[in-house]
Amino acid sequence: MMNKTLLSILTIACLLFLSCSDDDDFSQINDDQEITDPTEEEPITIDLSENFGNEVSRNFIGQIVDANQNPIPDVAIEIADITTTTDDNGVFILNEASVYENFAYIKASKPGYINGSRALIPTEGINHIRIMLLEKNIAATIESGTSSVVTNENGASVEFDGNFINDETEETYTGNIKVSFHYLNPEDSNMTSQMPGMLYAANADNEERMLQTFGMLAVELEGENGEKLNLAETSGATIRVPLSSALSANAPVTIPLWYFDEDKGYWIEEGEATLQGNEYVGTVNHFSFWNCDIPAEAVNYCLTLENEEGETLANTVVSITSATYGTTYGATNESGEVCGLVPIGENLSLEVYSSYYNSDCNEIFFTTEIGSFSQDTEETLSIEVPDELEVSVTASILNCDAALLSEGYVIIRTGIYSFHTIYIENGELSSSFLLCNENYSIELEAINTNSLESSGNLSYTLTEGNNDLGSISACETELEEFINYTIDDEEFLITEEIIANYGDNFLTIQGYNGQAFLYLEGILAQELTGSYNSVPFPINAIGFSFVEGPLTTDEYTNITFEVTSFGQVGQYIDIEFSGDYLDWSGNPHTIVGTVHVLRDE
Image 1 (tube, rainbow, N blue to C red):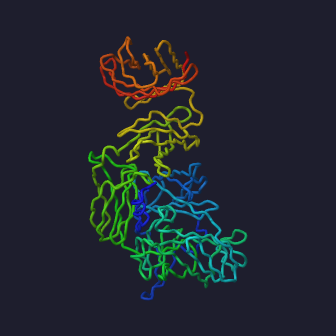
Image 2: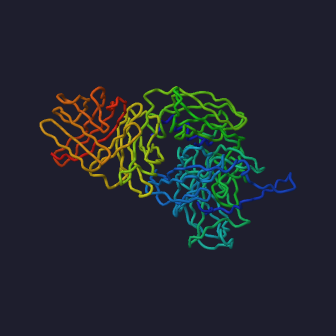
Image 3: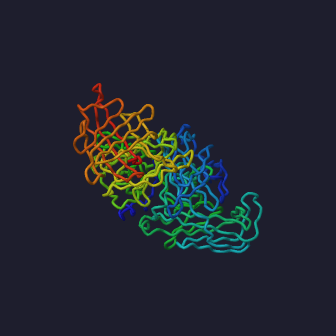
């Protein structure tokens, strides 16, 4: 889990900094709601879309989980006019979605859960989304026509006057009402995954603002037959939102109230709450997510993070701190970029962390001041990264036909709740991240999004720098045996006509697929498994000789072999190899490969 220092920073997050459904089921909001300003003759129409920029095409991958971090399958996902559903891992992929330069809005819905969503400033790379859906917990069942108070386990409460309507027909409702009720605590590290949209809002004057939250409520009302209910037009409800002790020092006596508009994808100011003891108390006239927030003027900030060699730092956690508005965090995408909102005119500090989310050893290893901003800004920052933290993995992901996977994804887990979801196209896995895990241990799973077949969970121990994992089959029907290798950038796979014989410490393996030919022979040590070096033909010492078409020569062959398993006849021999060699024309080549073959003799 994330260390306490990082948790205390992140759970007091006030801003939103991101890379990283159906219509509202429980609110009565019109797209062009008008708010009357007593100083204006004409009502104000709330609409921030003119700030979103031009329409652009962007790509998204995301995961939907429940409160226990378990993936939720069959969640309906909507981005603009494109829809899909999550798979068994709770993962979805949506490519070429039409969004805006400065605003993308993703909705997630499933029966039994309160609608969830995420809004962000999309980057040109793959945009990573994570949403934690809240269950429709029945906190209480109340009766229409009677005033009642519903309190949840955190001390938040709602007082109803008893007047309700059917949200669709707007007719008066009489009968029992099931109340689903959640309080979102700013001290909870899951809050940014649970809350809808992002902390981006329109105030009562239709000005865009970023928000510092002091607590949220989600309330949903349902009739006896599943009807969606809301408060009657002339009705009101009193909400009480507990004040987090971590925020009490900066808590104002009065604070604006904001509701989340599921159609627009952002918060809208409506009313205010007053601090009474250790809770904010206010009145609302409809139900959605409600939020107690201090607003701030903001600009868009996009950061590309690099190491000293100019290589982008992907999947890297950063935080930005303002003395006035607190700390927020995000993670860079595969292009090393992260974008979000920062407050205008505030001196800001940037911190970079030594591992991905929720890692036991996660610590700040780099801090710098990034100044204050008065306009939208894009910048690149080069930082010094300890060599032992930088890890990368490459692999070829195959389908059940042993061909490169056209589309899918890979999940790399580096801790209980710490993982990267990586989009795969044309079978290429290439990802980097910071890893402070002393054992460099990971679990990897490759998934074919077309057939929904998986490689299963595979365990690897990585080393500092690049780790080539060879070929990974995203196929529940495993190939019986194969020889897979890559020469320079060209991949070869042999699955038939493979022979593997062993006797008197001498091993020969050969395979041919009509185009590719590979032959290995070796003298093995007594323990059989272990590391071996190249030796020349004719072989007369412990080690391996190697022939591949085009043929290698003895002038220069520098290939290492790792025999990881050596079974009896009918069982598997597994070998990984990599290195350099010259062909007969004297041209150098780099090779990396995997042997997984049944022993014939």
